[in-house]
Length: 430
Image (cartoon, rainbow, N blue to C red; front, side):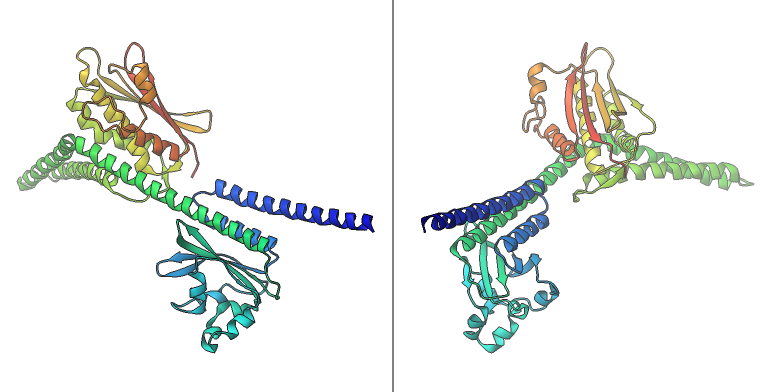
């Protein structure tokens, strides 16, 4: 008798061990999805639902997320032949049985749904969507963070089989992981919004520094257009009218008007506070537009701007305005760095090329006083600046933008003087 009992005991231990390993594997898979998709909540919730229903031998799993004063369907797994519309069309109303269950901050175990509904009014039971799915045993677990209800996890069986304490504990663990994923996603979203606001503020400040130069850049073509328009009128007043000269003058008027409009359009694009976009970006064209904005500032400071653009660069994808913001910041920094240069050539060299067939390279080199080793190591730290009135955020924002595009940014000292700021982004064909 002892041997069969011992064998039976070993069998139970093996079953428990197998169940433990299955649970650990499921939890590991959920954590892997959370780590690989921190910005995308949907695959995380779906992975939790799939794992929970499988491990708890349930036919139904639903995530309801708090939204406003109610709940919305976040992820689900329904029995075969059941449409989510069956649940959506019978959504919970304030004060209903389902709403009260969802709003609970403690797990609710209903061993037999039919018995439970008999204790409620027939009207409320008829509106209860889970009853329409033929569920008998149901478990509702809250998702909480700092005692704040974020949503609820519902696990249901189509037969009467009450959940064990271990199963309820496992479902509670899954709900806690969902709450962690929600909190990570919320904080990531807040961080992105803050970064966007900082980037926009930086663009506004940068454009403010260029106000005088850009005003000149706009006034010059406007004044020229006015002179051409006046000349056209004079040509038309001749007897006979000189139509050819008038036509040429009017063509010049249009050209200068377009030039002024282009400057204003570039300013507007950089000043707008819009969500991150994915555009088709011609790097050479994007950099040329930025150079045009900074041209007046370069002339004012006696700096010549030279370019070495590689031809045939691939069209990449990214946020055009953000990438132009990086280039503009680097150019303005280069122009300002040469303010202390009293002798020698004042020059900025802007380079583009493709390296290793995978990255696009942009470099901005100046002939300023250069950078010492201590400055080089801290240049891209937030709030670190070498300027008397600098905020120390420009280069830090540049780094965050470049890294968000999958690239990197760095600086090197040049000999005998000057500095070279460089960044790369992946060449992603549109």
